[in-house]
Structures are given as C-alpha cells and as structure tokens.
Length: 251
Image (tube, rainbow, N blue to C red; front, side, top):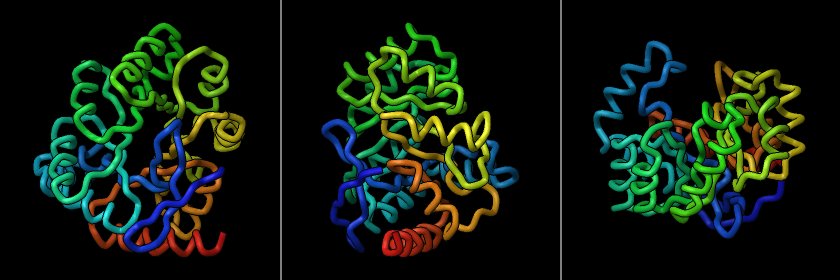
C-alpha cells in the first residue's frame, strides 16, 4: 500500500494518510499495559507494573515516539489516557484509540482532549454487523471531530459485509500476522478480504508466538497501512526500530 514519508529523530519512517490526517507506519500499542489474557502468566505482572503506574506507561510512549514513529494505539482506559497526557509533557503525538463497549460519549469526550486522529469501534459491536448500531457509533465519533474506524476479530467474514453497508468509516483494525493467528476464519480468507477493501488497514497482533521480527514485520507491512505493537521494555523498542530500518532499506 502507498505510504508517505515524514521525518523522525533517527530516520524517515513512512506514514499513511487517512482523510486529512497522518499516522506512522508503526504505532506504540497499549495491550500489555492492561494485562489482557493473551500474555498468559505475565498478564498480571504487566497490569501491576504498568496500568497501576501511568508514569511507567508514559515512559514507554515517550521512548517509542522519540525513535521516530510519532504515534500510539491506545485502549480507552482511564490510566492509559492519563499516561498519554503525561507523555505529552515531553512530546505530543497523534493517537488512534479503541473504544470500550459502554459509556462511548464519555470516552469520546476524554479522547477529544488528546491528539486523537482515529477511533475504532469495539470488535464485538463491529462483528455484530448491526447497521443501525454501527451508524450511530460512527456518527458519534465523527461528531466528536475524529475519524471513525471499525475493529474486527473476524476480518474474513465481517469485512466483505461491512464494505457493502453505507457506514461512515475510513479504516479497519484487525489481526495480521504470518502465522494467521486470530485471523478468522483463516489467514488466506482474511488476507483476501483485506486486499480487496478500499479502507485503510491497521494491523494488530503482528508478532504472536515465536515469529522472528525479521520474518514477521515484512509480511505484516505488505498487507497493511500501519501496525500496532506493544512493548514492556525500552530495549524491545530499540530492537524493533533497528529491524524496521533494515526492512525499509531492503524493500
């Protein structure tokens, strides 16, 4: 997919344009901070270490954006939004956000006080394929001054339907990775639907399991406009940036 360039602190990392805004090809994710189940026995440790301490989350955000990709993908939880505000004291950056199911108006009010570019509807609501529900939520997002997007846990089945419905949105958030993990109903079908859509695509779960970044990142970048990756250590960020630089120099 076509990308535009923007200057970073280390190198010119690509960005993608969504409507009249731009986001970087790589976003700093926030999933580890809330300790979701996919992190196994480390989930509780991550939640205690990060979600209970916004300054630790802010430290990761700041280190990430200083390397050159100016942007983050945040889950709409109070302490994560607090961490973004703390990071803004060092350097403001645009964000994409994922909504929770309840209290959407309140979440949007909080997101409007940040540099929020893109807001994704929760996948359980997206995958319900309820037109009126989705039209209502995307209108709320648009009325709040942000670009609506749809997150889906079933790209292979939901995207073909959503692309035919008259809903105001400009991007999908979905899992893309070389293993095909979380790519419902299969990697092949999901990739076919992702390739066929005219919407922008932001990938999550780019490196599940033990996929080496040197192999996994080129695959993900081939199929999306941007990808979100969570970090718990600064040296992880440094390592991924080195690999991203290498991938960009090869392709």
